[in-house]
Image (cartoon, rainbow, N blue to C red):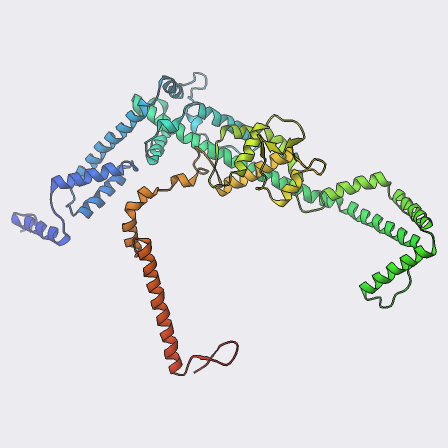
Length: 507
């Protein structure tokens, strides 16, 4: 005879025992209401049925409800998912006018020659960060922006839903997008995601190009150093010969005691030079020194050649590659200014010096003069963001009230790349380079969660209570430490006194 568990009243009685043990109540209507509420809330940020079912299971367990069958939850999740997504489809479709619908529908038109639509062009990967590819990607971004203002279309749609709808549209064929409202919404989400991604890619390519310009300038500086090393040594030799000629014209120096003392030697030499000038007229000394110096300079190649060589060597003598960046920036100028046309920059802090400098660039894009006026629209151009090395390059001694236009452009673009990487400047409509402050929760959203968070963290819910609690803990800790030192002193330990520094005693 085979024993059967679920027979008669035995199964019913055991189920009552299990419910009492786990604290669950079998109320089908209440369980459905709890599950439906949890699934609706979860569908605002999730779309996978398994994920929303897990959320419903957690809500049912927290409410003390006995879990319904899986098929019940699965059917409920599918129904509510279609209802919630359908609401988003109607919301987005109602915001599209006839021109918007026509542009989105054109993405699905298949070209008879290539037998392909323009839909795959929305999700094409970013090319290598070359100058020509940067120009092409800026054109691609401009084309995406011309499709429509997707941010206005999708206002009120959760970001998670936009990402899911865009992923669904990317993997489907053009003829698989059925249903007018659904098709338009999926296309709108795909275009919106493509615009954000294209902005990220354009900014990343821009930062890479500016890094490449800086690297080329550094490499060129090192190359020039090596090339001018021999010339530098030759100029130093010529300088030594000139000094020797002048010393020879002044006469032999008198011997000085203590040759190892540099100060004494220098004083004795100066006294000897002065004595030589007293003995011989100054005009004869200068004439002889001038002839000797001119002969030395002529033998070394002439004054003009030596002056040119000195300017060439001194221009790259320091460790500053900034003056060399302008030559590599020239080929990028058109692409970088085109980049400024498609990007909307915003400062994430109170410092707007870079943003204002970018506006100066835009206003003077077509200027071909070598210098820029120091004032723009009656305001002094703020270059405080540039370091000391840049400040020396931006201005010319001959024109102290003007800025060198090309160097100013390179300076602004280089610092803009740094600010974008650090997050001090954000790009509107971007994702990786967006303003992170706008993504933070407001205080109105955080305030209802403060009590629960403080309870989990074990801290007081208000500032005054938290300060009082921390003061009490520090006071108790200090009293415990003091009591420990007193007990150690009574038992023979402690610190020795009578000296300027306390020394621990060994017991």
